[in-house]
Length: 242
Ligand SMILES: [Zn+2]
Ligand SMILES: [Zn+2]
Image (tube, rainbow, N blue to C red; front, side, top):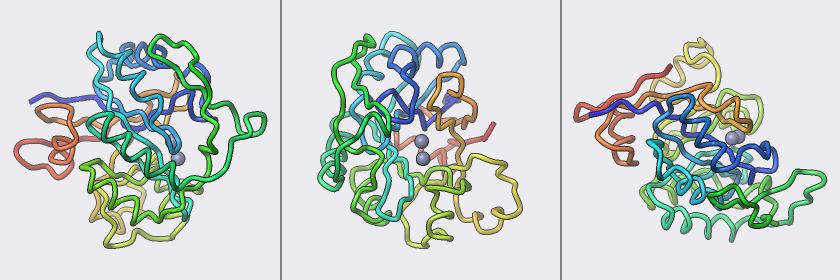
């Protein structure tokens, strides 16, 4: 059993709102500097740069999981994280089928596709900041069917969070945890969240922010099934917020 210092919400230069320095090699070197063991790449509505970061990390101790930060039709942000790129690409097909519009880089920002050596391969022309025409329930079900990890992002933020958009957490929503950015002991949330596991991650759009919030997972290996066990606290696995 090992304890993984984990940051499961990191954007790359593919997110129009993220810094160009958020390149595959740039992210990996920052994680090495900050002694982070496990990260997930969660760009807005795409996983297209995940493989480049996974490959850039291959010779390091950093484990990289492919993922997304999906925007549902209710404009709720949800992290969807998977074990391997094939499954993530399956999710990507579903998202792209339900995401309309083209990006206007001059207004929303550039969406840079990078290879593992930080070389620009092109631009993603979709409107990645848009909302996918699927509900949070539909998205969560799809993620669980693909054996992914489903975590609504920054639920305590005033925009694009589950509580800011809906005002509550639907009881039957198939999520593994919720992500919070502020003080988890905030009284406003403590009773309504008692049924949910809480994780913290950086939501980094700039290198300096990587690892500013972390979750420690104690588990056998950096896999989704192990993270799920650590969240529930079974079979000797566990988690802690730092
Ligand atoms: Zn977000
Ligand atoms: Zn984010």
